[in-house]
Image (tube, rainbow, N blue to C red):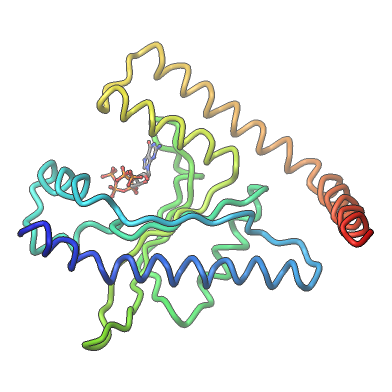
Length: 212
Ligand code: 0O2
């Protein structure tokens, strides 16, 4: 397929990512407007680079006409939460939605990956309304804490640097760091109520200052 055709192939994925970011950010806005605690801290989204999509297709010998079915993260959304138990709240919110169908879920928090990776993945089917009609696309939503995200983003960049072959001594450090991030999440969970009270007070103070 020519580069121009790949760009056309990506249009519904780009639209899906934009729509999902708006819709999911609206959940956070709603909680905030009601002065309630939001289980969503922030959201990012991206479409896979055409080059890395083709690299993955090559690696797993996926024919190009099967990519839309077999590559589930061409459209990817990441939801970051402050606390581990926020993840279950976000999953519940997503399970109730009518605008997407959950195909399956992967719990890499209970089933930690050998690398140390923790995250909750939901694979969805999402309809995108294009000029010619609707197209169902597959997208991946990753839900994780800020600590899990810090670890994953760092490990991802090291994997990129070392072309997927991170030296053993660094790999060991990363595993240790993953456990430290997990411990941090557990400790923060223990004092969640204290932290939430403090954040509420801080928000009231900031609002007062901004009106002066
Ligand atoms: P990118 O650049 O983020 O798009 P498999 O790898 O075959 O076991 P599968 O089906 O490809 O599994 O998907 P998986 O592992 O459920 O989820 C794939 C995505 O999850 C990855 O996409 C990463 O975003 C993230 N992920 C999974 N494992 C790890 C890990 O060990 N470290 C980090 N940092 N991220 C991970 P891509 O395409 O690999 O990368």
